[in-house]
Image (tube, rainbow over all chains, first blue to last red; front, side, top):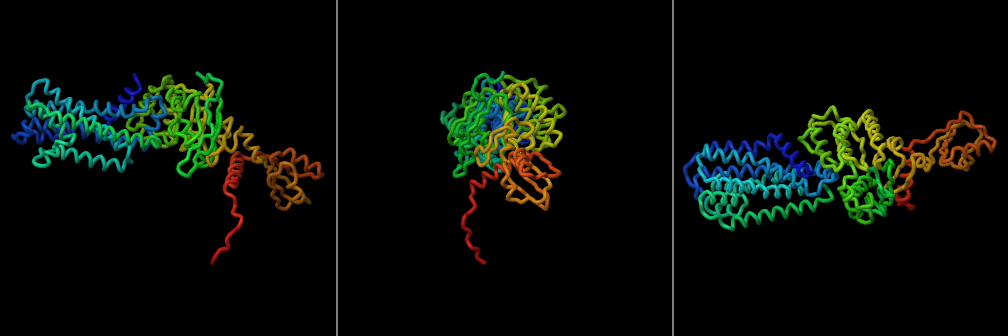
Length: 242
Length: 315
């Protein structure tokens, strides 16, 4: 097995053992969906509330895992010297980040699948097979953005700073993106500019059967470019101190 | 596989590392030859860790050139020919000791069987313990295991026995000797002088980022006037003793004379040739510690000359 794959596999083993991590990615979205998913018959973004909330909770699980699971850990592992230790092995320099990304992607798969299954069998959301796959893909690939953001924060800040910064950014994007509750008015137009809001809008547009605005896709790619750029700057700035 | 070329395993050519006005490493030049066990000895802040960091491609020198196995440090490290244990190196938490050693062995082009690594590092009994729940000494042994998880030609250890108790330290050096017996080159930084004395066949003394002495432990000791003599003798004066060959220092209390000499034989013969018959004569080696202190103190005096004029103090 190649070294990067081996590292990614070990990262997955670690994440599976971490209760707090499994709570945020798995337990919270499931519990919230069971509690709120069928609470109202209204429509949001042109789809049933049950479908909207399913997408919101899948996004929540996936994005939380990517950001909260990585930012503080990366910061801590940099402080502890684990990243330094890895640099002394024949592993290519970008393997550490690739390993984190691969692990975050792998570990959020069950969370996304379980929330979508809940939507289907508990929330009563009925969709053609292609749309289920499209929703899962948008929500799941969106986690790449938040992994990039986690790298930017984790490499730049010490653990005691990384924790509040990650939390702040996280809740800002969750609330402004309309993950916990649907937004109206000015907040709704702001949501269209956040990566979380864009992911949810793309997925709900798929469900509503309307064509997905190219601007939403461009917006997500732009956020990916911004977060990746920040990540690259952070990694470069700390090259001599990790 | 041992080092195949004829050149040095490691060479520093006039290497400096400056942080602003601080010269952490200042024009360091040295060569390590294949199969040597070399101790890098120096007080805290002497530039040991910075030198090792540069050797391992973790930091870039401000100036000068470092070569390892005839290539630049980065490519030498990435080729898997170096096993290293740094003071600042950490471990991946949340996995067991065995899982971590298995991971790092899997990253090596020529992995050592995991059971062998576990035995050499003395960590078989903690194989299933979580890495983040180990004691300081256990952590240190796991870090050592990671350094020897691959078949390498050069082992670099920064203060390897810090946090180890005496027994663990003894076992550590026993397994280290097993490693080096395979023809590997070993470079280790330490502040335990006894360790350098016993384990190394060559000692590099550095202070303020510069190389002060380079030789076998015996040579380093000799360099600082490293024989201690004591005897009883009446009717002798200090100026006479100070004029004897090889004398470094003289201390007289009544008829008890204590001498430090760089050539105890010459000192003794000159004393006897002058007609003296010292009683209760004892000659012993000074420890490496005194030698080391003498060498670095000499350097510190040279760098910080005592002010020639002293300002009168105001009340």
